[in-house]
Length: 120
Image 1 (cartoon, one colour):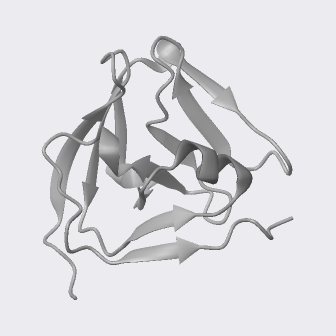
Image 2 (tube, rainbow, N blue to C red; image 1 turned 30 degrees about the horizontal axis):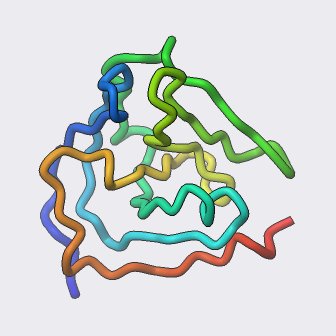
């Protein structure tokens, strides 16, 4: 299945304190099996930092790091939702939780199972 056209999407946490915008053509979605991704059960799209813009809520974000302390997982301090993280494998990319995007339907987009469990 081919890529979708490059489009702009707005996203937010549940309470709306954290708002962001991305541009992507959704080449694929990923689900990761590492310890944190399994627990948050997010479906993600990788977006280059040049196609990500934090619109509001920098002060509402809290960061969590573990293991190698390379990936940076962000959560809203108010509602606890995970909207995005800085990727370990591609530090110039964000992993965006597609369930935080407005009016987005993941139907028909290939989902790749990322193997994060064995990363050390």
